[in-house]
Length: 237
Length: 314
Image 1 (cartoon, chains in turn green, yellow):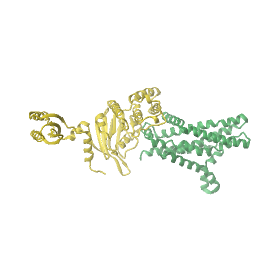
Image 2 (spheres, rainbow over the protein chains, first blue to last red):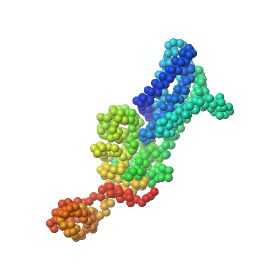
Image 3 (cartoon, rainbow over the protein chains, first blue to last red):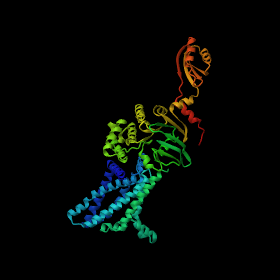
């Protein structure tokens, strides 16, 4: 079980790094964050990472789909999915392995962004708690985005379709925060519940609320479960 | 080693595989022969656990392919029709990945990779990118993948497609050498391939088994009567009459080649070997006997006969 997941995750991570995808997206990601960082810091003159971390959702809504579009769709298109599904590997191992591969890439990207808090610490004395909890939040949110992307990628053989649909879903989750202000009643409440921006506000403040952690974890687990079911169902076609 | 019972697979309302049953013994090489779209790939996909059948059952190495799928898959090496490769990996990396999934430890993995690489002759290509390899090499990397875990059963879907003639001969030899130790099912629509590599043939058409026998028996069975082909120098009509005079001869057809030399096709009663009688009959008349040989029905003819004899079941 662990062995298979490990082998699949390792293969996935390698394949990210031999293609330009990982490098290009990491570069764009860092450039965007650097741009935001310098803008925010020179504006506020405060050794505070919070505003930067709050912008993570926005940047990752655009970049997440590029990381996940390939995951299953590409294997289905080239026929390697047939190989994987005829090896002594369970669907769930395949899904978790793929997810971990993408997650490790996300962790790599976030590790590079540690340069920003490092700069703050060099020149100021930022509060470390919120930075830490902020990173936990960014990680959870990013992982949830990846899980959603993985699920969409399992539905199609076309990477572009996978990326586009994932993008629309992430955008909807993000924009639903605006709906909460427009629409009263249950619809607004649902919108507020699924709003990623809402979920995300407390974490960089240094508050790790179990409700938010549970929210992200359940999104991840649900998406991985559904992905497993989608792949298992493909066999029946 | 492989048991297939009443396997049926419907795609929507179309039956791609219709009540197929057969058995493959340990160490046997079974050829799976049929025109395109006959149901070969579907049958193989069911056997490898890629898709479940609509009804029927199949077992590999004693494990039901559906109920104990994971265990059955451990015993199978599979080369699908579209060779499943990751173009951004090297064959070594790819095989190593397969080895990990197959549960080989790192020492065994290294050992097995160099073993199978040698067997399918890709040793020189192990560290190039798969995406840069030619079709023939990719096909062989795919075959190496199927062999890597030393599975009891090998299921090869058109393993020689896209290879050049020399590679085809090499690959057939590799497959032939696999028999005995491994049980092999190989599908193809190339007939000589079957007579060269397989001990037994299953011919399927429109999802049904139309014949199952050794290549030799199939040819013999289709012949019905023994046929001879003759080439004789002499007057055509006189020769024909002389041939008809032999009691076991049923029919003589003359296909004249030139003014002097004539070709004859002679049908004789089954089992009666009249070659010597005919030879002496011809020579006694002073005609020149230039050639006398049994006419072999090629597997092609058997195949075409079987496949066209099948009434339109759709």
